[in-house]
Length: 268
Image 1: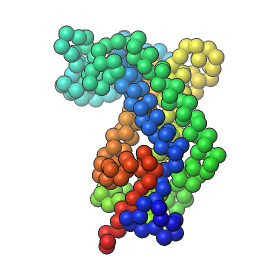
Image 2 (image 1 turned 180 degrees about the horizontal axis):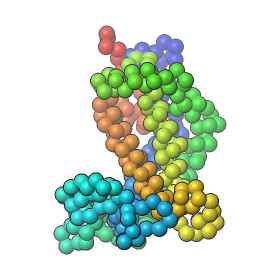
Image 3 (image 1 turned 180 degrees about the vertical axis):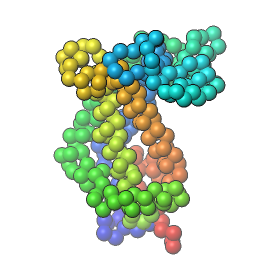
């Protein structure tokens, strides 16, 4: 493992501490199960509303019907993708391939969803506490003022679009796009999912009525919950693509052992 001040392409460094690695894999499992069980829960009523009320005859801003997705006034055909009726089954917005359980069962989906919600929240709070106490958030995740300059962000976007990833010592730390994405997930999307999920519980509303005011009603909370979940799903998709493009063996090994081989500079 090379010294901080003299690292170069090809050197192996210790990149991910144990708490980061543990939280990554626990979080990956819990988020995937919650996304898939959440899609099954959505299948029970594939409509989204703003405000406090929502029923079949109310105007929804999003709905999935057989073979179509309606977003406001925009209707998108989705034959075979969304709004399907599996052989011998009932109509569902999301197909069995992406739901838990795969056959329609709202009760079982809620059990899966709530069970893994604890696996999302408790380790997440521990990660937050460790991250702030040990300086991980400040040192590794928070973008610097220089990194937040529009020209710097635009340069990083252009480099990624050309599939030119950092090499050598520059690859020791997260770039600004990674920092912004990870902070958005850790401090915006996941908290948004948790708080809006609590808001949809009548028991929690009775104890904490301010949640309904915060999110503008239970149906608005359900819509925000869905949007945060889709944002998290998009992050996972982009994250997996980036891992494949950057070198999956090196990337996955670093998240298992903590050790990461710095990509070699082009001149080498």
